[in-house]
Every structure is written in structure tokens, then in C-alpha cells.
Length: 251
Image (cartoon, rainbow, N blue to C red):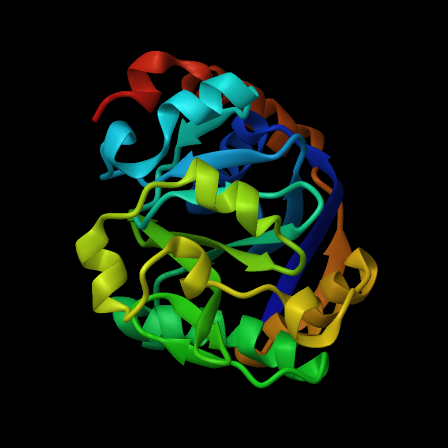
């Protein structure tokens, strides 16, 4: 397969980034764009909340408001995520649901293998941990989430290369039961960054490793492109949704 790749490393706010991901899914479903991988940054740092989560159970709302950290709800499931503008890259991919991708768990394994292979290229041994995590040295370095619509899927996820873990721990709220099930006492104990493992890696080097990793995992010929006017226009019609308290606090 041929896979279009968009490197969007300049950074956009959380509302635009989520609107663009949804726009790509809509346009792919309508047959207006090809299979697409996007690698991007949040700027400023932000939090996204899983579609099925209750806001007050998922984040430390008082701290977010006090610190002025923006947040919104995703259209994908999964848990709340802190996106550090100086320490985290996000990928998203829109694909038709066919072959091995028809099985949800297998689709996570195949797509997340792009992250495993990217980390291998950087000299880091990583493993996929169902349902949707990537572990390094037994700790989480990446999590992913997915939604499916009319025969197409959107999956997006994180790669923490230098995330400020003090800030991450202040922004997110994790139920004690969930932490205990992972054998840890705090969010910080559960996660690791690439910088902690191999030192600082440049954004460009990391993005290139991700391109190569997803090319392998999806058995794809990757070519680099830019967001089109059509895609930006479609996203502009969705962006207000992600700013709307009615959407953000629907649960």
C-alpha cells in the first residue's frame, strides 16, 4: 500500500489538532483523501480526555484551570493524556477497515507495531502490551486510542520522548484501583520517557524513525505530503466543537 505522511511539527492547539484528526477520518471515509499518517505536536501543552470518560474523574480540573492548560474530549476512547509541547509527539492514522484490521485488538497490535519499530531504530527495545500500550523497561512510553466509522478507523497515540513527568502527574487523575492493577502507586511510577532511557533525541530524528516504523508495520510505501486546503477547511468546521463546553463536559 501507499501511505501518505504529513509531518506537522510546528505545533497547533488541542482544538485544532483534534479537529484535524476528525476531518481526516471524515474525508477518508468519503474517498476524498488517501490513507494518511500524521505526526504532530500540541502547542501549547494540553490534555485530551477519552470519549467515554468523566472529566472530573480523569483530570485534576482545578490544576488545569489554575495553570491555564487547555483540554478537550477526543472522539476516540482510552484514557486522559497530557501532551507536552516540548516532550511528546502524537501520531494519527486513518485507514480502511479490512483484512487483519477488522479485528480491533489485532488492529491495535499492527498499528502500534509502528511505534515498536520506530523505537528499535533508535536503539530501544519496546513491546506492545494489549490493549493499546507500548512498554519500555516495563513502563509505559506510549498509549493509543481508536474510533471506527462506516468501514474506516482513526487511531492516534503518543510517544513521550521528554515529557515533564511532574507536570503530567499534576494534570491527570488515575483511580487507585487502576494503578494497583499495574503494580504501581502513582502515575509517575508507571511511565517512562525516551530521554530517561537513551538521552535527548531531536524531534526530526524521532519523526523520521516514526515514518520508517509505520512504513514497516503497515507494509507501506510512505511519501511525505502537506495538509491540503480541503483538509484545513474541513477541520475549521469542526474546531468549535472541541472548544464547546457542551462537548467537553458531556460526561
